[in-house]
Length: 151
Image 1 (cartoon, one colour):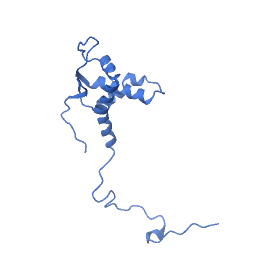
Image 2: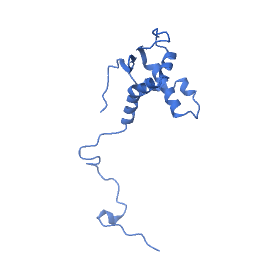
Image 3: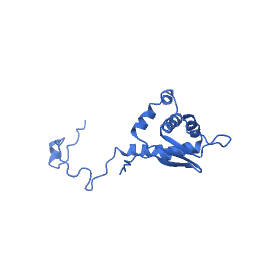
Image 4: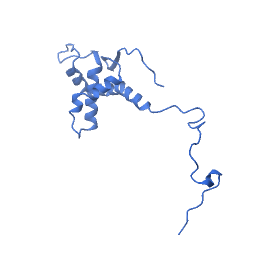
C-alpha cells in the first residue's frame, strides 16, 4: 500500500552522526526537474551508470535540500546551503550512499510498485468471462487435440 503524505512538509534526514538535511518532499515535479538538469543533459552518451547516479543524486539534492546541520568548512565554520556545497557533500561516499538509500530510493521503490496490483482474494482471473473461441473444436469438448502428421 502506498501511504500518501498530503501535507508535503519538509522532513529532517539524518545521513551521518552530526549531519542532517532538511528535505523537501520527493515529488514528481522535483524528479522531472532533476532529470532536465543541465548537468545530466551534459553527460556523454557513454557515461557510466555510476556517473549518471551521482549526477542525478546531485541534481535531486540541489532541488530538495532546504537546510542542513553539521556542515562546515576546513576551519569548522558553518557553511550555508549552496548548490556547490551540496555537490561537495555528495562527493563524500558514505553521505552519497545514505542519501541514495534514505531519500532517493524511497521514490524509486514507489515508482517500481506503481505497476503492480494486489491479487484478488479469489485469484486474478476469478469471475473472468472467456471471450475467445477455442483454438480447435475438439478442445471445446475437452478432448485432446489431434497429433501432428508425421512424414
